[in-house]
Length: 193
Image (cartoon, rainbow, N blue to C red; front, side, top):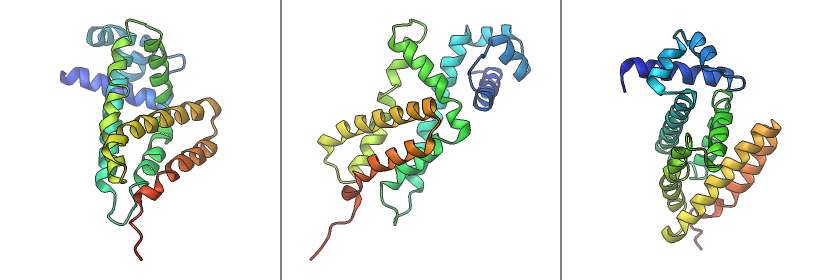
């Protein structure tokens, strides 16, 4: 990616994170980030092309954040602290502003929109291995961990959508904590005696 394109993409991500996607137009975005809509079309092909690139980059950064949180998990912290920290991070206002874009494009892709269909390739697959690895650390047998990982991905996305629709972060966090707590026994050290 050229430096110019990367700068425009970073500016677009920052703008969307701060202002959301409601009523977003290519011309309005271009004016807000100090470029022209023609320059955005040149680099991204269309508004959809730009938004898909925003989602791809944000997903990559979110997976990198998950990996960083996993690496930073202290030796005395239970593995279940990782999904709790991750949930807090993805529900921070700057991240939550980007979620409507993700769900909008995801819905269009599921409905068969050819401009967004490529998005579906990494939607679950990109998260499957990191989640499976975390569950294996919890002590879930490897042959079961992939199934539980898919469940965790679905629950997280569902609760994110619930949060966006309801605005009730407290209730969604309580539900997430309840879900995570069901895995706590796997992360506890074996009892002796």
